[in-house]
Image (cartoon, rainbow over all chains, first blue to last red):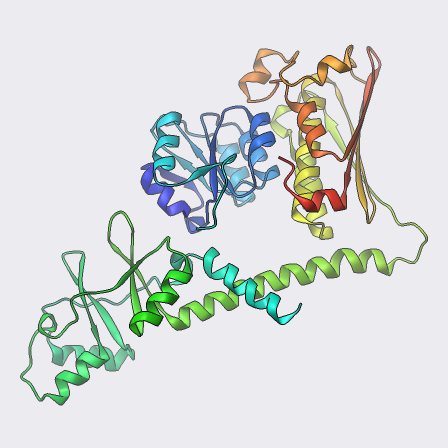
Length: 120
Length: 312
């Protein structure tokens, strides 16, 4: 699944990375605890979170995440946006809640980080 | 690289690359009401070999140069495209892997396939065999460049140095309680290791462990130093502070045990996973602390371990 598909499924707005929407998303994870993200998320994943501080982008950078989508209509501040731009990390925002966002993506076949991921 | 390796690389790529990544996005479309005589000018001027026929935003057919030649050969009257176009259009979705496109080309012998969005069914682009070849070549070139530069960088760097033992040292200074800049040191270290050409998984492990350690310095201490020693076989990250120290290391290492204040938790940290995470990323970890004096943490990541698998 590419980021463009995720944008459509979550009816999301692109905050950073309009040009990165063809990025391939292999898996996803919904989490507000950054340490848990660092611990359990695999590289190339999408992170769905309600946290919007710059540490979310830092976490994405360190763990080689493919993109971040903020849920519950949370909008990041300028610092977070600037950091994401400088690190080429796409940021999306959806008004859906975390559970609903995860549910929609899972229904469309996107797997979680602990599931066996098939190539296609 | 052996030739049969190269084949499997391409086989891998045709599963990995999606149609949407290699298709041509700017598609010239025609209306079903356009006349064949007008089409002649369009095809000639733009050197197109065909175009999708769109009515009210929906794909209803495709008109190719073969259809056009048939019409010419038949010496028929001028008529709208809708009478001569092919209606059952074989389409691809943007998120399908290239391998699906290749088998469709093989089965039907088409020159081009229309690409639509899986959900909205709207036209997204057009794909020819040439686009597939071009996309594969581009990807191979990028992979080759990556691999080549990785090989050149780290190996040459270490090999060019004539010494019995080579060690690179980097130091980063962390300011305590400065949450705004938290992660900058780890970010700079990660970029440096990437430039050195270390394996991405090794770099990721070191970056995650260092980031957690940096967060600990910022949350609990007035600051400290991160010193990184890079050797061809191993990376050692040494984190030192003269902060409050850890009274009970056993307890601090338990997942979920935390003494973090509420404001840190609100930022998504301080859940008692940090040291545990560092231990997961490290090949070996060494933690010494004296209450009231400070903490010394050594994170060893062997290059072999790191390249082997993801830390988590």
